[in-house]
Image 1: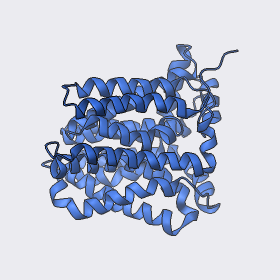
Image 2: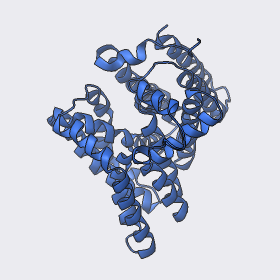
Image 3: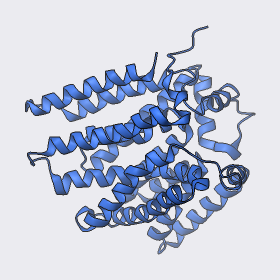
Length: 351
């Protein structure tokens, strides 16, 4: 059975939602979001041999033991695996946990920026669901902690913000690319600045081996990501939108505005790497995964401040953006060399 069958279930629910909107029937957006997120979580969680890095995560779970925990690889992810191994849930417990916590983080981000929850769910379906939740599982957990950290930063919960960022780094070292945000925001507070330096140094020391391996694989060998081009298109469009409408998009939260500026500059750099230097496309693609935060915020603010839900064409714009994101994913399924790891969907493993 292919993944298209399960996607048809999801989109049938979505089209029913759009039908209700067009008929002006009063519906609870929160409940629709939770229902669709639950369907997606179940599909992603109880898969077997689906995803490009499936074997790596399966081995990680099966060898999970306190005496074997490899802190150089990922402290947080190893502990998560050990916890669900102790509960004897199988790898499904790990996948279910990460799926649910991602959608929980997405929900909180949507509430924070006053976004249309269904819209950001559809964006994440294209940008995170397949290559993240069903692919880069560990990096998805790191993304979750970054979302929580940004939420705490906006709400001025500084200690919790730093704790979430530390969790992100100790889950996946690539999230250190966000370190300049925290250095800038806390540069006048010597105590927080000292903590940030310690986190950066400690994570670099622990992750040195992984960084060396990544450097050899992604830089020296020039690993190419054929899916990077597909995922860079919407990121580039969001950069253009932000450049044109920046003054309208900026919010009352100064910290969030700086985050957007930083992510904009970083996004431009990563897009240029993908388009101009194929040898760096793999590393750029991995780092671009975190730029989903930028895309979600930009698209949400466009619908909040420029299109607005009172616009008679709001539903048309909503449908256009949703379908556009999905078409990119669908194109990757057809033309992407590695999409074969997702197409043949296996539900559970029954001995």
